[in-house]
Length: 273
Image (cartoon, rainbow, N blue to C red; front, side, top):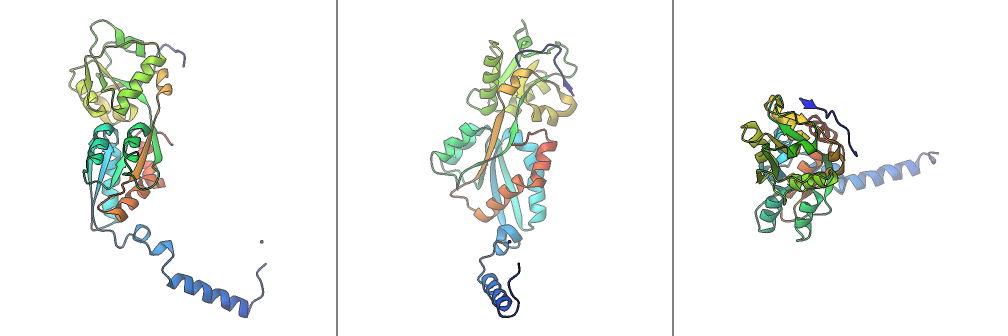
């Protein structure tokens, strides 16, 4: 359930038949038999996709990507999708240090750049969704948190994502936009860790993504705040240059960007790119 703040703030004719037509048919036949049509590729037909696809993905993508992984395996029998979810900066460091992976989906362009700068992405990454922040409170919001500035109330335990990860960087941007100075009780390694603190009632509130608030259901309560509009994150995805299973990697990226993939992500609360 999401609460809305009580206060608002800066916020061309067929040519002849006969010989010409016959020539066209022969030309088309020759083209098709050359195998150059994209429909003959494993990515399009799915007939030759096998093996494991290893996807490194931002922690906030866990629920939606797990669903897409299951659908990928069903659509491509003989494949298996494994995930490594975590802070985008840590995932990028792992890739740059040689960790075997096929796909990288980051929660910010900045963390994707860590990988592209090292030449580890195959082609240019593409943004597939966007995400924005919410305040997560314990159920019922007993502290009456209605705005970002309320997080500075005396005695309130607030946690943020570490500054090096996208959710932490976004939170800092939002706080600055609102002119709010906040010293958190702790900095967490990724957005799921921050949210868990609230779920366990070890913290009164956390600044996390709205998708994580939605995924948590009634375990937390969400509070929207206008400054979140100043800190919307673009999520890029790329097949990796040294992917052990490049064909399957390309197909997984295609699924994420497809209408089917976008529907799953939209239902999770992500915004269209």
